[in-house]
Length: 444
Image (cartoon, rainbow, N blue to C red; front, side, top):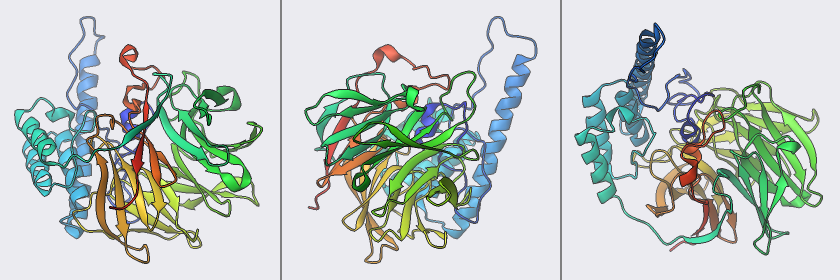
């Protein structure tokens, strides 16, 4: 799904699921949102013509969903057993109001037991009250393995913080966590105290990806207002740079053509890259020009999200809606990593290279899980998927993590779907402080 402002925050969490169904050759975006397709009931004092307008908008959404169905089917002709494509086919069939196609496709996906599990606000809303749909979802939950064991690292003190990005400063032994709701970054000190590190006064909008450049004493923060904004704000996508020692902002890079900056990665040499999930582009910080330039063109990677460098800093691994993509930095060439058809490697939010494998935090297409993607010796192919954590009671809308001494510290329950486009929080009184979980990455 293409990311747009004025959409529920869950759409953001989805990593803008399906701008296209493959890259770079299937680039037609869809304006379809994973929200309820039903026409709302008329209010008691509805303005003249409002009902007709609603019906028109509803029909437009259904047509857009059907167009996406057709594109997915075209990709399935090339990869007929790709389980991610099949799952999206079920989802968009539901939005296109093709109940039988949606249920039969979802049932086939469920029988493959690959961990794909419809959750709230995920695109299946037209079927949410359907008894057969509920039975399929119940069977998925009963049959999928429960991989538990992650322990609580710490909780954030503010229940309304709504975090998305997290980073760790090894030298200072402190964590940084960014808020999409409150437009600030907090520091958790080595003695467990929480203090503000940066705020809206420093130019922050909603804070997404965070990454520490330890060698240079810098913190990089992705900031945008694409899905939560004030009434008079223009669209803004920036990369902010802070000095770890002085806590001062030392640089700000604005990309006027970007739509929804998401995650950031830093190489050992200090090279910096940023994903734009809405356009499928990847930006690179050009030191000579002192500005962000395109490394991967728009629509290059559908729903580009989590990003990490290869150990030799020559390639990027980028999470997309249908899998993981690899970018050759010198040429800008993009390829989807080949993978077995039964590997569900799409919709990864955080993505990290660790000990010859990729660690991913997955959301939206499941309640939330942490996975390890095994790679071949050349890191040119995904060979398998290991579930490191799934169905943990606190894994609800997980987003990103930070690897510290062989452990992934992951934002477990972000509450990001509660954030409205006007920055309001749904059912704010019932929110609870977010937990950061410790997921061991050692191999059994």
